[in-house]
Length: 403
Image (cartoon, rainbow, N blue to C red; front, side, top):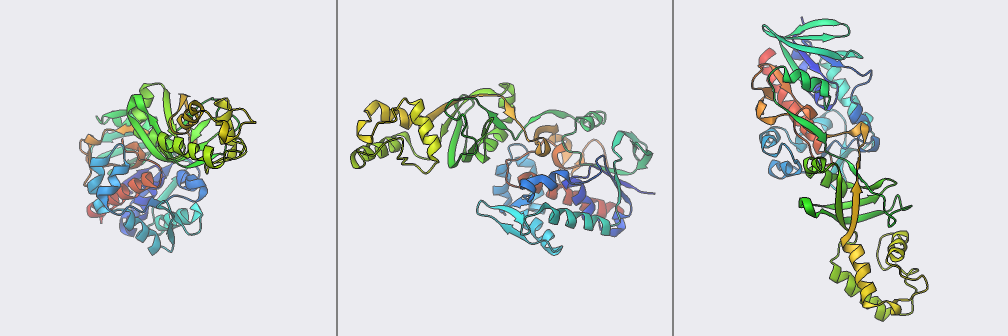
């Protein structure tokens, strides 16, 4: 009889299965309601799979997690990004560190990661039940009873790696576990504003975005989209402000510095242009490294005539342009989330978990990993790293129990 059930065929669930070894693997069943596993891995990083991040000191690594920082420290001392790289390298998957420290397979294909995980699970003889979602979990003498479309089975241990599926949070409440109500964590900002209308696709290499009333700020690449603003700076801000922005019903004001310079520095630059390029047309000569279309949009918004040359700029006009570029105020009205890569803040309260084993304190042999927990991170491979690390700890504990 099988003794272990893994519920959820995502990154965490598969990494548990991939690390069990044959002795324990043959005692394990993995249940996944979809007909294909590892869906988030498949589409991560535009299909390239951002496996992890090149941050190898656990003390630094935990700083990228708005929720879970304290609890993950011991987890990362057990298994961190260097261990992840070694794991995949040992299985023939070469990884590369990109300029922004994100780590991808050299193949630039998530299939490389998927094949390594599925091959390891197969080698461990884990029984895979696809299109067989778990409908109910109940605690019984000596273990747990799981009901799926195909029937009811008993297991001594279960591992919950179901992601942000509300149905399973309800089941876990039945075990006496406290659930933090989930809210979106990574999302883009909806904004309708004449300054960015028709400018989708324009990006800024290093912008600073602030939500002053919430005392939140983030830096990084910024992208104008057809619905508003996106890019790493926005996603970081959404992660750190997930709870506050949910409370604000996603209606708030942001301040954007598009040029990574102070207002005084921009004023000085424009005054220099007024002296050195006095006869140059302002609309035709963009002194910044962002696309000309945005420069023209800002000039039009500031009511700078198309025929003006730099010599014509008044002190007030220069200050207005500088304000727009370094302290531009935009009203946000709503959010947009990536349905397939949806990340939440919320889930099982971290006080309920023993992070030495990833076991529920109130329910022996009930293990949890991944997004079912109230842990989330900014973009860059950090959410996957939490999955790999938590799953590895679970697999080690299961081997200790059943091997």
